[in-house]
Length: 177
Image (cartoon, rainbow, N blue to C red):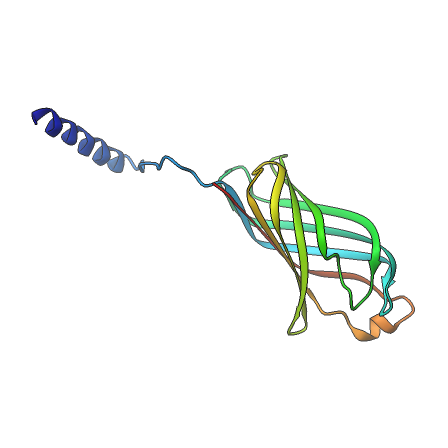
């Protein structure tokens, strides 16, 4: 009985000492991940998008800032994609499953495999990709990317040049345990 009281006294003193020194007790399980709530996306189309579907070379550059992470070295991230596909002003961006590699400012990468779906809301095109990190930092964690663009201008889509670029906002969240 005395042994239990002595142990309880030492445990209490240890917690009080850590609080006085500004050291918080840690939990045994840590959550991994990263969330970047501020970011930009820019896409280019060559030739420009029109109302009729056609083969277009598509490039996308997403820059994520405002990141908080279980990896304290992550502050920003960037994605670059380039491929040729069939698109139009009414069938914007890439939907379906696509790779989405993110290079972090610390030199690490997270290779995401996401299933993208597009919705049109209040004059905006919202492209949401959900999936997992297949390789690199945060491997096995769930991932979600949200890209938001203004809905294309109908006059641009009707022009001979077509819609050649779009810019918008980008966010990413990777969650695991």
